[in-house]
Image 1 (cartoon, rainbow, N blue to C red):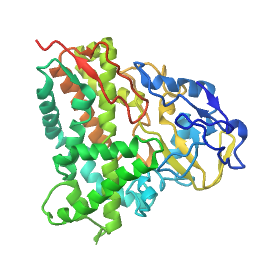
Image 2: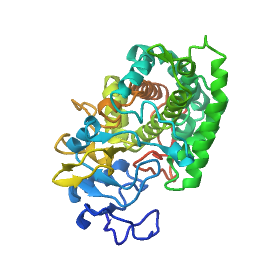
Image 3: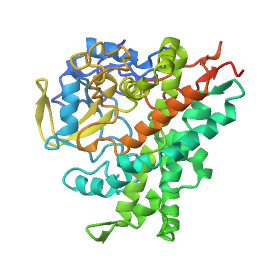
Image 4: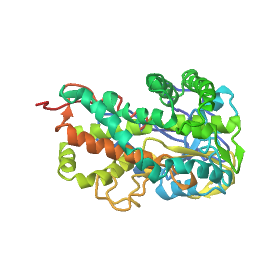
Length: 422
């Protein structure tokens, strides 16, 4: 792992002009671990973050701004520091988190993602009934149907791309139906989301993806207004009231855009990485086949060891972290891809242990902004893994085919696997 100071910062393979470093940032803490998010071919693609926690201080300053955030961040890598950032609304705000729409000059807030307490609670109370465990249980049949149809398409062939043919499709179909979007939009939605989340600083491409999504949503909202009897989440939002007052146009756009951003990528990427690891680790695959009761806790361990998103927070009050002053206006990045492996919290953190107890990881974030769709994501992943192992015979990676992965949202775009179709 190569570390660089503010004098030489690599950004996607090039050296930018020397960045401006705030005066309260010690030069010794300005560093960028150049390979901690790199594509690799390891069974556990996240294992490259191990040296971050072994060799770097618990807090350091990255001079590379990330699009959709409030600027170059302090990086938090230890579990307890990340937990405090997620839970402490006195020192941290969420209002600039994942604000890609700001790149277009849009001023609405993502709801509830960009909303702090106490307003955050009223929006969660409005949305929570649609995401409750009881509501999700009613979707299990539709989730299973979507998964079964996809498996039907390739089961007799003896091969498939587990990412492209399966992982990227079933959760998006479920999301489209849940929100009330037409299934015909699947490919376009995926292309827009990919441009937003995987363009790595290509502002024009991010703007294209975000602009396309916002235009679609604004044009689709009037269609939902004409369907007050529709039981989809989209119609519920468009016709929604809080304390008897109808939602404003900005509130509707804020909710629709937030849910659109969150509903297309994470379960798909997690599924692809999950099946990739099972193809590369045959003993683990066989263990889950032999012990179906381990599937639910195994999904939780897949989630812990595959934290796709690291969340940002805006500092709103001066304070110290591990003896280092951070000031109002700074931003912090909660490095879940490191904190989920903190040896002070998780015994043998790099070992995949389906039976792990008290698996309190940060893959769904934490604090008041714990992922709204946590119950849906778990249900989708458990159903997908259980049904895939039940119906698809023992599978392995296709020989001679590259199957690289990245410890982030790109995950594993292609997972070519094969099995004995007889």
